[in-house]
Image 1 (tube, rainbow, N blue to C red):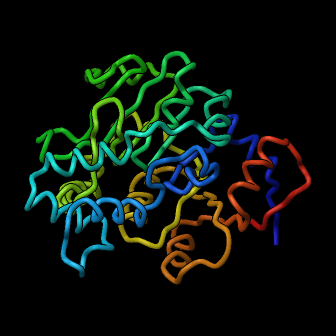
Image 2 (tube, helix red, strand yellow; image 1 turned 90 degrees about the vertical axis):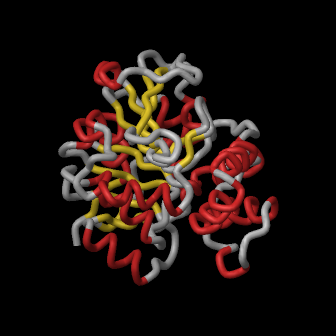
Image 3 (cartoon, rainbow, N blue to C red; image 1 turned 45 degrees about the horizontal axis):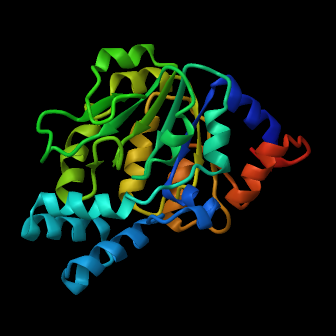
Amino acid sequence: MTTASLQALADSLNTGTIIPYLGPEVLNLEPETCQVPSTPENLVALLTSKVSVPHKIRNNLTAAAQFIENFKHRKSVVSLMSDAYAPSVKPNALHQYIASMNKKPLLIVDTWYDDAMAKALAGQHNWGQIQGVSQSEHFGSWVNYFDADANDNKTEASEADAWSIVLYKPLGAITPAKNFIVSDSDFVEVLTEIDIQTPIPPRVQELRTGANFLFLGCRFNHQLTRTYARQIMKRSSDKHWAVIEGTLTRMEKKFIAEQNITQIDMPLAQFVEWLQSGKTNYEIAA
């Protein structure tokens, strides 16, 4: 059995050969600073506490959001999501670490609706974000581009080619324009085209080529999570890592085997502490 040191992983992060891929559980690193839903379960519980939905779908985020969209209008979904993610989220240690990485150009994938990673990048120069958008609100467009000072004004796609840092938010985000891919119909539109990569912006496709991915705060126990990860990773390297503590589900085991993802079985907080400390004596199985 060969081994790969975490130091090599950290070095690869800073040389740009590894792309950080953030999931919602990143927000749980510093729960005292997080006043927004940090898991799909938390989010659907909040939505269904505001609007009654049938019991059989009250624990299903995308179905509950679709029910609200059908019976209360899309604007109600956007309003509820905006209220859920309106509280300020202070960037935690991982956000700050990623924002300080030296290698440019840098691609960061963040698959949740908060704006903590964007806030961590606020002091950087020449960066912007690409956000997935709902076809029900932006028919014919898959993403919107926002530079660091865009507020709610779209940036031209061509400008992203010059950004040193690209923050890719495939599900949208609260800022700057309240874009959310969350309902069944939102995902159906994307999944219809994602296998041929249409919803994946060209700049992201360019930056991922030949790169490795490091999954942080992600679980692969839902088909949508696996599908997005698989399609965003397409045409990248053939070796990746995921920090996931404990036992994997059957589908997670199958997915990481298919995608050649090595599990780093340790708490995310411990991994981030290690990154900050710079220790070199911890090894993982490759």
